[in-house]
Image (cartoon, rainbow, N blue to C red; front, side, top):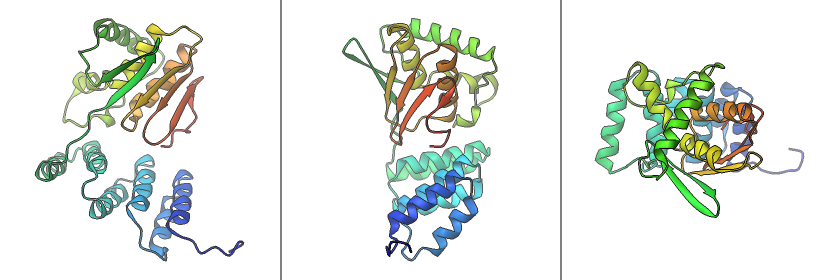
Length: 244
């Protein structure tokens, strides 16, 4: 109104994102409903992100389905919807999502993290066994996790997609690619060096917590760039404010 600008999708998207960050998810939904133009997949993804962060399961499911109507090949949204169902232990719905993915030939890209050490790129995937130092990395990772558990770290099994139980659920989180890359960085870079990691998928919440605690305990700066944004971890906090 102040500058005489007719709002477009980008303007609505920015406000919806801001409302989501502020926890005003109901207001964000009302704004989507009041848009003068049809919401596109980006708009629904923005609402999906807000509902995921604020644990509004019903809204997240609705928003994810709207995304898939507009972009039926979006593998990331299928995976996120499967994750939402898994967190609610709705295993039949998880199976249905995976069936739809198989029928449409949609596959989940495996998580991969890259770190540069001495001008050489080292790549890690979840449960990696190919790296020449993987045994030492896993040993150091296990030691680090037990050390973190001593100061209150609890693996967040909400980020496990499979219907697993107990320790098996915890173990499947331990070997995510960014954890392996962080430990390799601790092993290979001098104590004053920033650990810089590039990741192809959105960092999961458990690895996000892990990186914050490692940065604090090891007095290191860790930077992880995922497809959404940069995460600068230092002194136990992240630059994203835990919203991504």
